[in-house]
Length: 64
Image 1 (cartoon, helix red, strand yellow):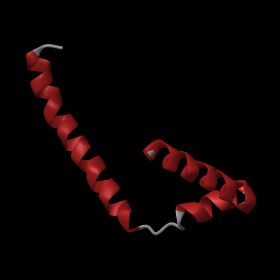
Image 2: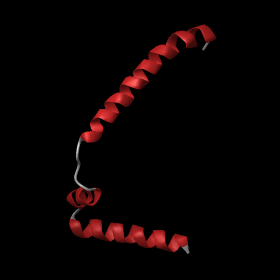
Image 3: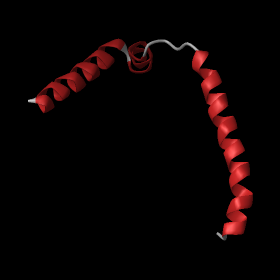
Image 4: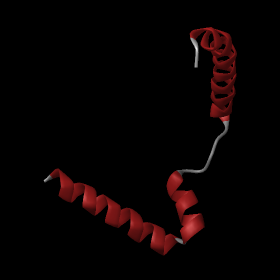
């Protein structure tokens, strides 16, 4: 890409990026259930609990 094209495209891309970031920031007010609740709903409570427990145990083992 030539420098002339880059200087023409960059401002449009910058405005688009700013619009995307602004839209993402506006969505920040949307409340969602806690991740564990969503995991339990998707996988079932028993499996979700075992999965979280296994991942927690692995993290403890990695720390030493």
